[in-house]
Structures are given as structure tokens and as C-alpha cells.
Amino acid sequence: MKIIGRQAEIKELEKLYGNGHSEFVVLYGRRRVGKTFLVNELFRDRITFSHTALSPIEIKGKELMKMQLQNFTHSLLRCGAEISSLPTNWLEAFFMLEKFLESKADGHRMLVFMDELPWLDTPRSGFVTAFEAFWNGWGAKRDDLMLVACGSAVSWISDKLINGKGGLFDRITFEIIAVR
Image (cartoon, rainbow, N blue to C red):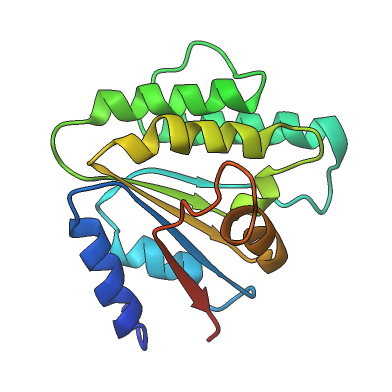
């Protein structure tokens, strides 16, 4: 399928992809406006790691965190990672992602796509802290990484990523608000 009506976003994303330094792009807006489609179509053969979080509608609490970690591990496996055990927390999961990406580093741009990122932040899961550690301690220091975080929970994106006062404060290099 062809991307229609997103020329400005395509131009900017391609420019960011071609930069010689790390990029942290946030794409957010209400549901069903084509955020995921845009990233998947534009970067079809260039995504190194892609993960879509599980909806928190049916499952809650510790069981949801466990399932999110299992799903994250499955995404790593689908992308070709060699995993010997399931992570027990988000720090371990992001360390596995780092190791996988290091194994893929070959001088070309690596693109990490995290879809519905806010859904990963279950209560007391330590997700945001681990995500901060991944980006600040590893990702932001690379010149071959583009991280695209996508989500429809606009308030979470705003509070935790864009306007937050925590470790991700002022780390976003570009944001796209999808309204159509």
C-alpha cells in the first residue's frame, strides 16, 4: 500500500534516518490515524527491531508485566536474537535488546520501532527507568541508531517523554503529532 498525505512527515523521517547520529523520534496521536502504518511502510526493509506492546485491557497487574516481557522476548526472537532465558524485568529486557543490536551493528543505520510504548509501562514495572537507562546509557551514545516510539496514549507520551522531568527530559530529537 502507498502512504498518502504524509509527505512532510516522510521527508523529515528520511532526513533523520540519514543523520549520522542517534535520533529519538516520538510519533503519537489518537488511535486509527496511521502512525504504525507510516513507520512500517516507510521503513519496510530497514527496521532492525520492531515491537508492539500488548493491550492492557484484558490483563492487569503482575501478570500483564510478565506477558509484556514475554512478548518483548518474542519480538527479539522474531528479529533473529539468540535468547537463552526470559528476562525477569525491564532492565534485563533492554540489556538483551542492546546485545542484539550490537550483534547487528555493521556500520549501517539501525532502526528500533517501539509501537504502543505507553502500554509497556505497567504499575511498578520499572519500565520507564529501564527505558531511560537504555536510551541515556546506550542508545544516545551511538551514531547508528534511530529509535521511533509510537503511541496513542497521548497523556502518557506527554507526561513521561515530552514534558517529563525524569531521565528522558529533553531527549526527544523529533516529535510528530498524528491528527489525521
